[in-house]
Image 1: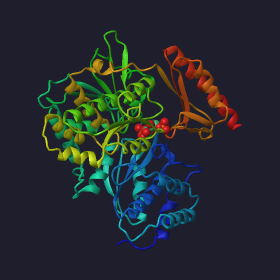
Image 2 (image 1 turned 90 degrees about the vertical axis):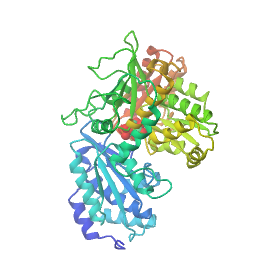
Image 3 (image 1 turned 60 degrees about the horizontal axis):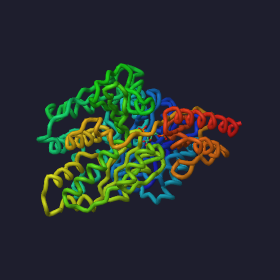
Length: 537
Ligand code: G16
């Protein structure tokens, strides 16, 4: 067992090697995220927190991922992963913020003692933390800070090395379920690739092959992961063209490529020649998001984003459930960013829920359905099968091809978090089974023209929202301004919210036509800037 008290001398000394800059940190949409040169102390302290979290949960393995995902290369960040591979429980986010903002080594010790007391943590419980990182040049130094944090609290971590965020989530769940009846897989990257490859091979076997899929890896960690995966799956089953795989050129990560670029700009990465009706997709910097796209025969670009993926996947799973003779409800979770046309399409078919931005919110809401499909419009999402749904599928007495496929679908999906690689296999599965190209997939409904813009304000924390971020509460008067223009716009909808990962405010607008959507977003943007100026003055 570990000692019953903290080694304060060691923690104070080590913490002095990781001095805190004069910045206030907040645990945002996906953990701490900011300019990499500000993060050393935060990550050291996250090491301490991860150890406490593991002790609190009886020694379960906790995950720490060093990544800033879609952010520019100069940024970095850190997120914690709970035992089943889900995001850190929100009740602990305040502890994370408290530790990150403790002003001195003494204050840090006091904060640790407060947390130990408040959360009733038994320090004698041994802790285990598995950690990984993306391809950012700042990662090695920050990982060192994390290791220092772990060591100073007497925890030897397990280094997973260079991994995608969803791989780290997968590893955490595997460690915590091995040897139980919920065993999720082998806790190695090899185990991850083999699990997905086996499930996809079952699903693709005997189907007419689709033309090769072109993947933009955002010059991030998705590239080596995808290459490793394609070496364990037959090219005959999954022909892939891997692009934007340059993880060594400084500044290349997420630059004019990747899922966030394609989604926000509504265009392919510059230099991509889209062959009409061929399939293209883009991952983000840590490979937890994916969007698809294609060009029609007139060369017009069409985006198949998270909303389109949710519709495709929910429809397919519902059909399999029905064909297999099962009764399991499928529900879909979205955010305010979901295109109005997708929400209308889905609500006519399945129960839907709208929650605030952030996988942690969507994941939680999806758990309330027997089969919960969740996707953010930006391409971040997955499908959750409840334990009851899984055992219903596993123990159904009547074998059928639909049942076998449903079983394989539960295996091809990374149920811990959104996973670009696994989601890609899921989309490819549906297209193979439906014998669809991107055009047929896209035909389900037509997106309302929309615009998403970033507004840089002095203090994004002056903005607060309610109603799943669909209404802005402060600065006062802004919501009324937005409503005035939306009310005059055909199929108009617009909202303003502070980002939890970047230092900006996001403005979304959609309307019946491109001109109206652009006008509406310009108006909301100007209004947000004005109100922010007054709030900050
Ligand atoms: C993260 C979150 C997503 C969220 C996105 C943008 O994605 O995991 O849930 O949609 O940030 O969040 P915000 O609008 O608050 O900046 P990623 O892929 O960057 O980790």
